[in-house]
Image (cartoon, rainbow, N blue to C red):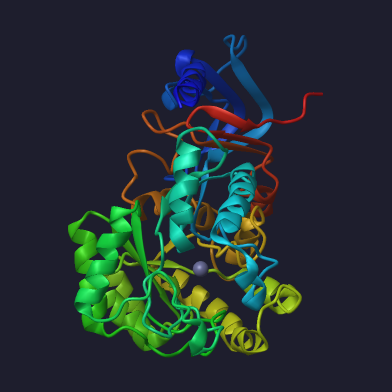
Amino acid sequence: MLFSVFGVFSLNTLAIADTQFVYADAFVNVKTGKLVTRPLLEIQDGKIVKITANKRAPLPQNTVDLSGHTLVPGLTDMHVHLTIDPQKHGYAGLASSLPRVTLVGVKHAKATLLAGFTTVRNLGAPGFSDVALRDAINDGDIEGPRMFVAGSSLGVTGGHCDNNLLPAEYKVTADGVADGPWGVRKKVRENIKYGATVIKFCATGGVLSKGTKVGVQQYTLEEMQAIVDEAHMRGLTVAAHAHGTEGIISAIKAGVDSIEHASFINDEAISLAKKNGTYFSMDIYVTEFILSEGKNAGILEESLAKERTVGKKQRENFRKAVKAGVNMVFGSDAGVYPHGDNAKQFSRMLEFGMTPLQALQAATINSAKLLQQEQLFGSIEEGKMADIVAIKGNPLDDISLLENVVFVMKEGTVYLQPALK
Ligand SMILES: [Zn+2]
């Protein structure tokens, strides 16, 4: 025990002992959309303490020289499931134990970080496996992104966030099932007790669950209000899984911070979201994986049929939401598709109406605002965490470059570097 405590301590001490520097051709100021040329970033204790633009040689000792590269802030994904194996959907997933899904999460956490995502919001995991992952990352035992975790997703009996795969005699109920205003308050309190830092609930049916209808609302407005009130009172933000129009509208009225999927939004939902400052987190890439590879990955035929009606509509509505100026964050639902492929969604966000800067903002500064962490990360600025990603070329010219990051730093620690030539 002592040994492991000192091991962690000495690792952290090494990481923060010295001033280090990062130099590159440019970085993207995600607030203005402007490139800052030849920046030298001075980093201490995991934070950017000084930025010098137009720096000429010689560079200080202890500089990571990323000439030929552009820096962007560490990317953020506001909807992942690190403990879900994308090859084990449906009944295949029932065979994995809680320890097994936690361990597979270790692999996925590393893949996500190495893909340039330094912060994620994990929206639903069994048995507080996400809390364990987060704590192991924070303790320096494993490598992964900064995690905001939901614990179990709240859902009604038999709804999208319950587990409906087995008949009654097996007595399977998902951890997050709670009904009634006081039932859901108790579940929120339980999640907080065991380490959740965000609350997620299922406001409507979903694509990948057995026997639920995507368009149908599942919690009453009263229950949603109880969840949001309890979570906000405790200082946590709330994410609502919602596809159907009525469920989306009720969730926004209840005061949630983000709507996940937001597939069947209408004009009323869009204007309510704008009025309340609600964020939409629309996973518009995942449909391609579900429809092409989902069958082999164990996704049920009824789910494939649902996706065929949802995916196209969601993409059209993404365009509408962007045009209307709704707050948008990058949320991929990675876990349904392979971890580390998160960034494939960027090009689809452009295809369906965003500018390159809007897509980059969705995955940086907007997420930081949603999480109420804007003072800590989301942009490359003096005083913020040194969460930095480098790519070859300018992502504002070609957003798909973000699929191939070559350098990843989280809080001043380097996890990926370009190969030495
Ligand atoms: Zn999800």
